[in-house]
Amino acid sequence: MSTNETLMSTALSLFAQQGFKDTTIQQIAEHSNISKGGFYNHFSSKQDLLLEMIEEHHDQLINHAAKISASSESLASYIAQETEAWVHYQTFFKILWSEINIQQDQQITEKMNKLRLNLQEHHRNVLYRCYGEDILPYMTDLLIMLEGVVKEYIAYIIFHDKDYHSQDFGQWIQHHFDSMMLRLYEKQPFLGDDEPPTVDALLSQLRETCQHSGNGVKLLQAIDELERLIHSSRSPLLLDALLYYLKSEPLLQTDLLRLERLLCQEED
Image (cartoon, rainbow, N blue to C red; front, side):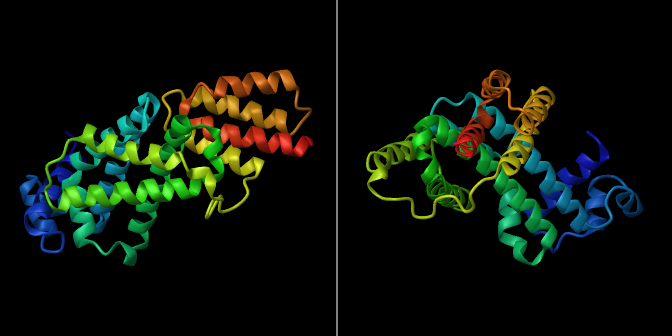
């Protein structure tokens, strides 16, 4: 374990025992068997340490979400596994939610928003794979409902130390989403998309999503070639071939579908 990892692990334990505000840098250093000066060789402040801890947990959650998003065959399976990940890291997030005024710290706010947006992309693709392209006009509404419900359940489970079975929870969520889908199309979307997508915005989003794929380098090369074709002669055969290849990555499917629709609209 590196010194940075030791300091973060020690800090997490102390934060859990006595709170973030009441834990001093001196205590973190002593429990990590280094000097206070040695601490400053790695982190400029306790706040800097906390920001690094957020980044570390962000990466772990996103990597976990990427794996389960690509492998999950149902909404129930995805929700069960994501909930297990949140509960696994509950000590840290419980400290963050209960002791840190996130709204008053811009750096923490930015990191938490990054986590939220990255997870939202996984949720978007899971919903698309489970319920098909007809839900795209309703995607914003569905994301708000899914994330709001799951967030409140996770918070309740963590703060009340509630016993639960992840598979049962996932099936509970899917059951009610399946029921809602039966009548979803009786009403127009309440929010719909916040802004009409542009080709460049979708290409940018595709590149961002590729950062979380194990095949990211090749996918990015394919997206670069896709962009070149879109802004040049648009050879239909090559364009179709690239789109077909990129769709092999489940995380990209929703935005690729939106891109295809937008390109068709521009041709009409």
